[in-house]
Length: 377
Image 1: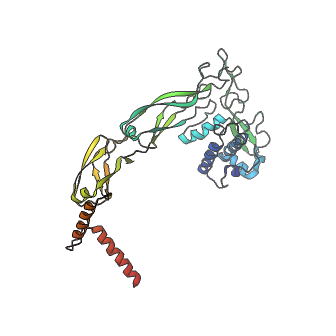
Image 2: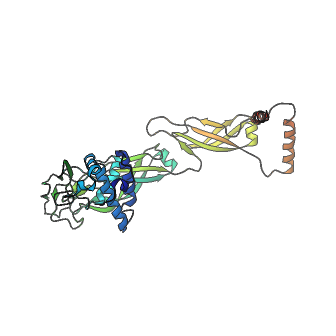
Image 3: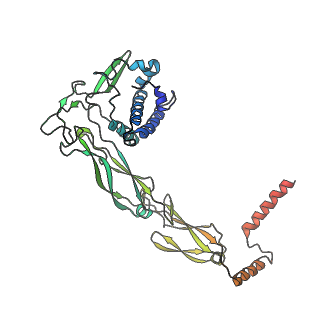
């Protein structure tokens, strides 16, 4: 066991609550996990240290004992034949606890084998597929039940025996002063049984690594960050225990035209100066093809128009969002002399007669004038 202060190991204050402890543990366990740091002995040592610290501080009795007596509360039997030492912490177990907490996995069962870990798979799809729905084939690296021993971990023809350390309970109790601490049996690791003749294919684990191919149905209307749960498609449990679940998290790729906000779609539409001034009709893209939008005379840039029912049909209800089109007025470029002369004539004409043809400009000028008048007073 590490002799470094356990609060220092997790990077939390001594007043940290359970949620703060769990958050710190998850972050460090992810950082130092052997799958992310292959052949890194330092990371492996840090990983074990983090696991040990969390197992003590997350248990109220152990934490109280540690706060009062320090490491002396856990000497004399911890890790011995009848104790539950931390030195044999299984990386697969820790991996399961980190992700199991994240998805509500109950983890190991007392007196039974550990349920398989839940898995998270990120699936990138287009906006069109997210809106219309699709079916995707994915390959998930995971642990599946060994076919040779059918997940039992024992060689065919052999049987498991009751663990003599915990007598089949999967738990052992350690008495230290006034405190009684119950721990997972270090001999059978909580299963209550011992495999004396392990399977040659999985070496007694009951599981092997494999890339599992699955077909995932994506319902119409899913949004970025939505998760689809595939029950029983996570990691296989230990020695025939139930498998965990697979959570497929949707990541919608950015679209060249549309931006989605809830069930509404947004897009920007360039429009000529003439159409904005005189009014008219323009074509706009929709998910079902071309649409038409009537533009009133005198439309200003940035004006937002709504086309009802051309958004996204919600995956959680029967309601359908709208398409909101923001028009962007383009300034004419590459004008010839004749076109420039006509614009100058138009400008002269607009400045005559006293009619305000640029309402925003006029109100802005009045605001600025009032601002400077206040400064000079």
